[in-house]
Image 1 (spheres, one colour):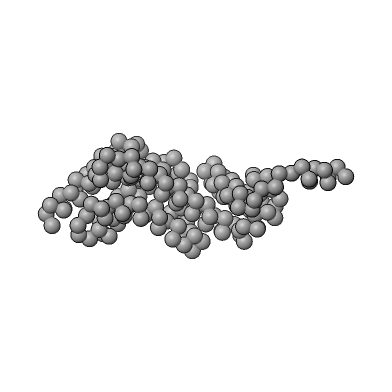
Image 2 (cartoon, rainbow, N blue to C red; image 1 turned 30 degrees about the horizontal axis):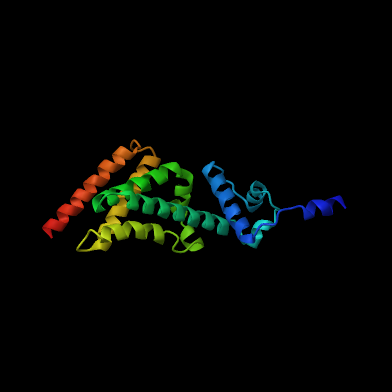
Length: 195
């Protein structure tokens, strides 16, 4: 009788909430440096039964793909916010790059998971497209010729800068990122005049 009362007093949450909670718990585990994430461990952290995650994820790889996809969504939001907060196109390009590098520093383990795991592309196809498109669209709004190559150059610079800082190859900091990205914008503007 007691277990029936306890069961009836439980708060029933929609399954979509559970999926998001599992992703959030797994992401928190990644950020804390847990390298041995399991569905059971995530279930325990979420306070649900060991079998509950299987309603949403057939295996650990699918959960990791969802965590990476969530990370790319967070990155996209950070880039969009930086873009909207800038006074002009040049400033937006720089602000996005600084936001990209800051995201990598603030969420280093998640960022590494998003880019270092080759299976992410299979587990969460096109998960990086939205974040990249924010970068590419800003470049396209500024470039007359070959926007695709300019966007790739821009992404290579911000991603390379982020990785160099994460790996402690160069000192981290938004001032350094801003300086490097300002040089890119100056080069981009000069190229437009010369073409």
